[in-house]
Amino acid sequence: MTTKIFTDLFKLFFPHVCRCCGNALLNSENQICTECILHLPLTNFVDIVNNPVEKKLWGRAQIEAATSLLFFSKKGNVQKILHEIKYKNNIKLAHFMGNQLGIELKKSNRFNDIDIIVPVPLHRKKQKERGYNQSEEIAKGIVNHFDKEINTTSLIKTTYTKSQTKQNRFSRWKNVSEIFSVTNTDKIENKHILLVDDVITTGATLEACAKELLKIPSVKVSIATLAYAGD
Ligand SMILES: [Zn+2]
Image (cartoon, rainbow, N blue to C red; front, side, top):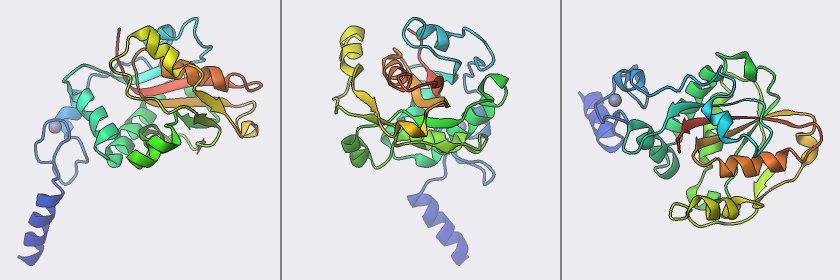
């Protein structure tokens, strides 16, 4: 009885509910219920050469292979997931979704020769405010399936930018260009880097990061994101 009261109280303060539909989770379920997982809009881009994620970066940065796990749609479950990961401190969900992305990457041999994983960095100040970097937490889920180091010291964000949502594509591009830089380059020289982010929208952030990384001798860059937002 006491245990039950404790469990009920625990659930009251830490609700064990699906992050997508809000229904109670079974003990065997984690973060998202089975029903919602089955209905997530998978892109199945992973093994497709010239898929829409790669096309988005054509002529902008030399990318070996790129993929996204899910299609983003406004007000859909993928938006809820990204919101939880980015603004609600739901690090467990970031690990869970990163794990799903890792499983997906293993379905193709295009990502077999990845040497190191680099999450898109936040500015030092922003990371201090948020307490974590969502891309780094996603990467921690990916490494369940890729026994590789996560490098958070070689690519850094050097300019603190305000929210970009109200700007058009051109000023957004101007805004993120030149604001990443590479340090500790010996750690990534001659490596095939998997660059990880939560979502690809215009591609401007990933383009800026890839361009910096590609300045290092013999570096190759591939990309994996949780979600893909079309134009
Ligand atoms: Zn659900």
